[in-house]
Amino acid sequence: MRFSTKIAALLVLFALIQPIHGIVTMKVVLGGPNDSCAKYTKKGHEFLKITHGRIMQQTGGVIVGNMLCTPKTFDEAKLTYTMVCDGVSIPGMGYLFMLAVTARKQMLSGPIDYHYNEKMMGLVENKFLDAENLKNQQFDHEQHLFIKAVEIEGIRKSEYFLYEDCGSVKMRGLIADHGLYFMLGPDDKKNEPKNHLSRMYYEPYGINEHMVMN
Image 1 (cartoon, rainbow, N blue to C red):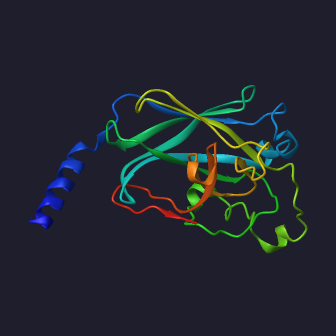
Image 2 (image 1 turned 45 degrees about the vertical axis):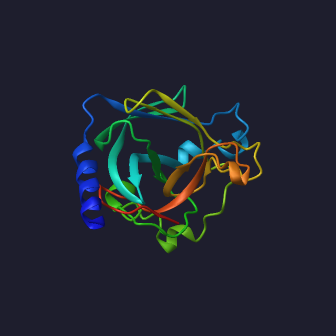
Image 3 (image 1 turned 135 degrees about the vertical axis):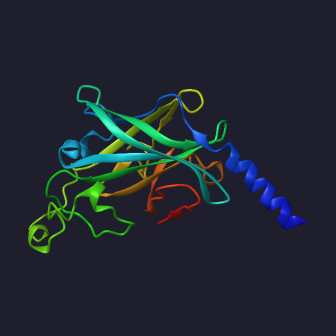
């Protein structure tokens, strides 16, 4: 009986999964010269770029909604990526989201410690990880991206998420290298008042996959 109940619940859940018919957008605002992280981001956009994002919905750690967000424009004046998202979603259900970042040009890059997609990242094709190209590179504290805010429209209401800036000791809005970055909300139990970034190991490309954090 219990098994039948679980099957019925799953059937109801999957019946709710449907394409989003309106336009869903994700806007990512980078920190600029007047933000608290300015001394760390002077060269950030020159060396790093966001390749794509994902909006995901999950239940029990299993992905049940997944939208790929592809950059369409970058506003140099406002330092804002605008991405258009496409995929499946469950109406009215909360969501999680991630960003993927890669190098624009040669810099001191760390090893690949996540489920890597060369088509998206291009690090191998550009030889950014070749030992010969890395041997003379040095860490430059100005080569960070600061994810100041993310705005998502079209799933529920328009929602705006601010991220932990450099007024915080942990500064977890900064990105220093290529990788997958998962957006985490405030944790009252840990006295964390702001959203912040965490590394992600596995990027789910569809539904019925599991979320795996670093």
